[in-house]
Length: 300
Ligand code: AMP
Ligand code: MG
Picture (spheres, rainbow, N blue to C red):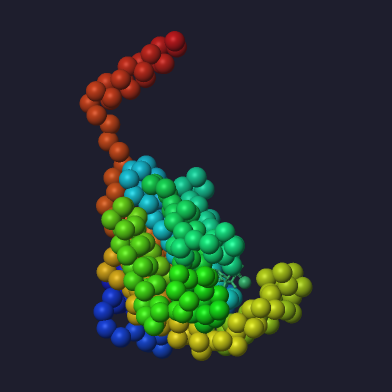
């Protein structure tokens, strides 16, 4: 995929102003026309090569982040079921140093979590300086699944939900991300955009292959019935929370290799763009290191 980062931005980064339409983003996008002519195996081989290169670049970027110990990166992954979140995490992070990486998967909130403000549980899981943190689902669930099923909203101070309740949540999220950005956290948000047709194929595959049964839950099928409600909730989310400090990326997810190479590439380029330097050693420290080297090489 010989796209420049500028082109990747133009195609997949959601502008912070203007109307957003999810239909402007093609889940089946597969790079250039030339790729459409390749067979599935050829594509796979091509993708594997790209991913190896991606992995090495990301490992280097992560090392710089870890060494500088001033900033952190928060990667937010949202998607419909079977869009490939887990596989993307596995592939993208397989080359990086596990010490510099922390991953949280957020499920239905516990009663303790529901007894707090909705950002509480995410706040506690943020990456330390020097680390990459991945949120497999995030506070965006609180304007997605909860928006589609409003009965999931926890107890609120007033008896009725305010008219501008959702706008309030978007505002809170934007302020939260602004706060993170100011504190040195780069926030990267990916919506893996799978089509309804490919979701069906992947569900069927999970049902047809016993070794994949564990990946399927009956509730996935239930949620599929709300497909258009989710699309609307995604669109509202993008429209209201793609900001200059933390823009959304809508990633085509019908082809797994496309998803993985794009996500890995965007993370790498974004970390490189932070301008981090390896810590430098002062003259005094360098003298001490030299003295230590001499002492050790003298066999002491
Ligand atoms: P999975 O990621 O497939 O293991 O499923 C996790 C489930 O938790 C999904 O059905 C999510 O919709 C649900 N979930 C995650 N966050 C929230 C939230 N804040 N409120 C309600 N449900 C959530
Ligand atoms: Mg699931």
